[in-house]
Image 1: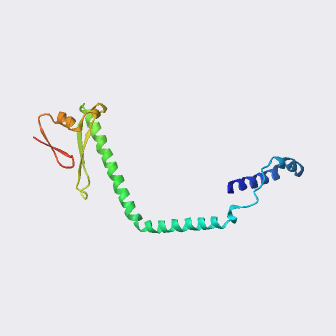
Image 2: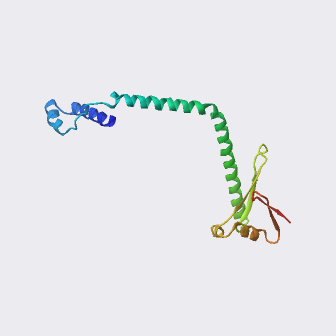
Image 3: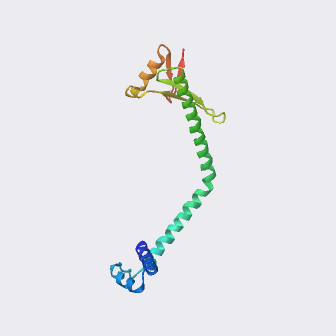
Length: 157
């Protein structure tokens, strides 16, 4: 409703600047009528707006103390993704240069503060139909593969 009244107001203003008074009277027949009331006149609207503002303030106040921690966590995750992407690109380049066939395993060490090593297996699209243990078995060959509870695999001769 506010948009409707705003449109009519701007149309009246435009007609007033572009046409003479006689022409405006002629064109007024084609104009939509102004509504007799405004939505700002209703008490329920004011209550809803006030309630929404109060709720936003409460929600914002609840999260504001946590913003530095959220930002730090976001930066940590972003940097992890960058390191993973770099390790992935390095593995792809090595596979291309050495003409290795997929699947190939690669890993990267997370920073010394985290102390984690992430293991990955690059597979081609055709390998997605096979179960993961058959792919690893075909990758390992004669070597034994030992799986821990987290399904991270380590190769032992």
